[in-house]
Length: 240
Image (cartoon, rainbow, N blue to C red; front, side, top):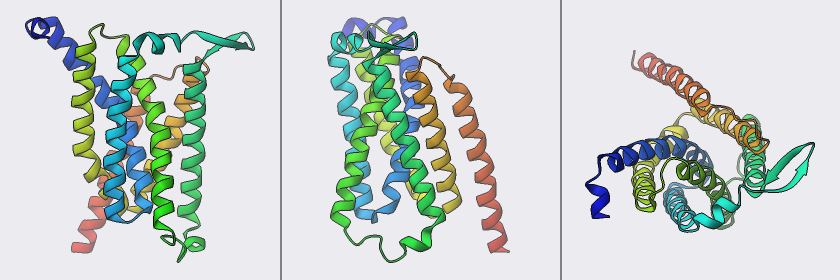
């Protein structure tokens, strides 16, 4: 490890990989912000902390199983002339789960009248279900993130350091993002639309049709900037 710290290329790899992990962690933060919005604040904070801790554990665990993880990219069956690996199957399943979950949440927001008075009736079961969903999606995002990291660096110490730094930044940013989403319904709807977009990208990756993440993150950043101006405009009108 001391030798790595003395190599400029190791620092360059660490900075590049950390930036990549932070960008890939945006999906995780958006999902956590949306999924915890339906449970009370103390439980939401606990669920967010558990989710981010699991994200860190899953990523480090996958890094420690590099040989097994690389084997997951080998085709296990073919369909329509295309080979599908376990990674592809997990990405397709995770993408479909995201699309279904986001669609269900959008329906719940639009038909909110039907849920009035029913929400919060079983806080323990709601908390448990939130944790289960966080575990499922953490596994999917961790797999995608770590397989990408493996292609950029061969040093396990650098990859673990980048993952830890990225998860710390995710932890710091997740609280404010979750509160902002919970306080602004239109922002929550936008976040749910992002989850549908991310789900489609994961399914496409599973079918070997890669959608450059730069396009997706640019769309997210542009839409978020427009929504931020809308929030500021509403606040100024109330102040006037």
